[in-house]
Amino acid sequence: MATTSIVIAAILILLAFFVKGNPDLIIKSGMSREEKEKADLQGLGRLWFRGLISLGIILCAASLALSFLNLQTLSAIFLIFGLLLGLLVLTIMSGKHMPSSMQRKLHWSTGILAASIAGIAAFMAVSSGEPKVEFGEETITFTGLYGQQIRYDDISDLMIMDTLPAITLRTNGFALGNILKGHFSTNNSETYILLVNTDHSPYLFIGLNDGKKIYFNSKDPELPGTIIRKINERSSRPE
Image (cartoon, rainbow, N blue to C red; front, side, top):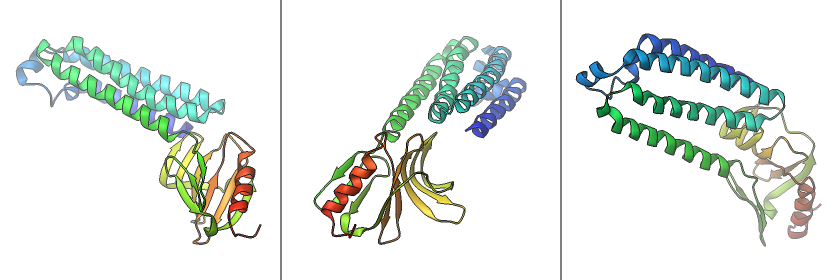
């Protein structure tokens, strides 16, 4: 997350200098020639130059501070929403530098950006929630994003682990700070399905007959052991 924060800050600062020298690019596709002549392009350039530099510094500093405090998930959330909210504020403030004929277009842009922020917030709220565990007659189900339905008789291995494998690559999944969901790989190309929050331990490891390997954990440290007992009660797999 620290590297991501620094890269985003660097991009924003470089973009600020580019916009300062080319302020017309901010509105190039949305204005007629007459509207451009009425717009305060220099004021618009200064606004975005200062705004992007300030946004980059604030995002980087705050995200690094949260990461240093081991608040990885909060750091990721702040980075995403801080960036979007900063761009929203700059878009709204741009209105005073544009002719009145552009105000409706600006309102549309503001509305679209605000709706995007709301949509991302809803997706992240749903995606980052802890999976629920449901026990059926023949299957156990982990609900939510990248949820799994597993037949008891397909389970070949059950263990409680203190640590995860050394994950190096997300191949098809969701990662937000300490929350990892989906398919991840290690250096030796082993693939795992993770439904975990690395803030918590222990982890439940489930190995399947087809070679699939799943890790799950919960805020409740007793839940992995409870799951193992219930699976053993319902399956024909020897303990």
